[in-house]
Length: 284
Image 1 (tube, rainbow, N blue to C red):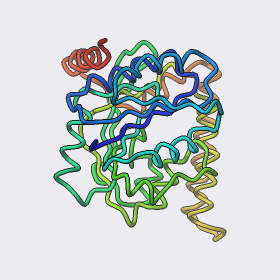
Image 2: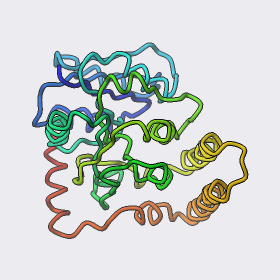
Image 3: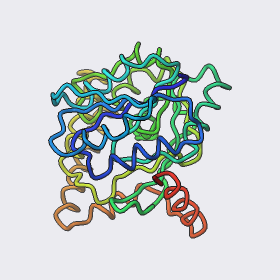
């Protein structure tokens, strides 16, 4: 197998079918899918088990709830292919994702990790916008401006991930910490097209967002140390301000507005095309 797709899931019964179908509907077929149960208490494991008839799919479950970071490192350790592919259990792959990313990686051997833009979708699978990131992130500024990668869009060299594992002390910020730790000595790139349907609108998010801001402050302290620095305190202050803004909008049920502000508007033609491709991605 040229690539291994790793999906860790916890109580993802509402969306897991969509995620798996979108892998099965890829135009690129030379893959292995690892479905790793993180101690789900809903019907997620039953949903995953339905797909074991496909020899490319393996379901793993130890009955424990260890958290995403532990499971990501576990998936990487189990990967025996040239490339490792990330995906969340509630997201959907564009049908061309693997084909586009494999082709680029094969033709650009110096790239360690490759991401892409993404469509933002809600809980009803409606496309709400396009999330864009820098094409060639190469600085800490890219990391702290959240323009490095859309985490579940990435594919990379398995050897790179095995050398640079996720740090378990950075809950909800494990990706940002990894990019900050490696960006100056690695080669990153993003394809400038949406190859993932990223579910964020309509999903309960306040607690996770506040955890992310706490994790970002820990990362800032790690990067900038104890030295008194304007840049350090400016970045710290921004996390507190963003947290307060998010709390306020949560109290008035305005999270959808905030999340929507992060994405670019999809024009009518692109919207129709995006919705058609999404339906193709999840057809059974």
